Image (cartoon, rainbow, N blue to C red; front, side, top):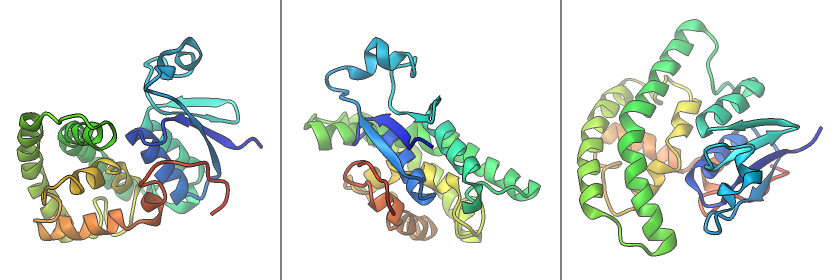
Length: 215
């Protein structure tokens, strides 16, 4: 069987999210580096497989899939023995609830903040501080609810790590390293966040994704 190919920029947030999930499942993969600065993601060859011209997409032995959360769900379903998507109906419902929380309550602000910090870290751009400050204020209020959830359980969907927790990388670590204590000022969020950034699957690609064929 052909090795899974991950097409994306090694430092791009979506590429690192997918690589983290691949690492959790010990799936060998080859990174096909896409030069975003040169506009390679907007070429006809790339758009054939990712019509929105975004990063990343995968080629799993001829099966093409894009959108990071869809890719991550596919990997977790294919390698279900890792148990990152619960299958018991009630546990799965709680998982889907947590997945909706991440998508609608965390990501809208976190992704905007992370993009500004990403541009500053990797390209030396001056961040839009007014935007960052406004979104940090919104996110801080959302994290109040996270703290309540995490006061009752270890992870966002229960007592075990799930794909939902991994959906928070790399935005949460990027925000946490960006000079704000927003992820460490609330005790239960801080505990969860510390576990998240210490995962070997995240630390493996913290500096950028590389082809990984052995674990």
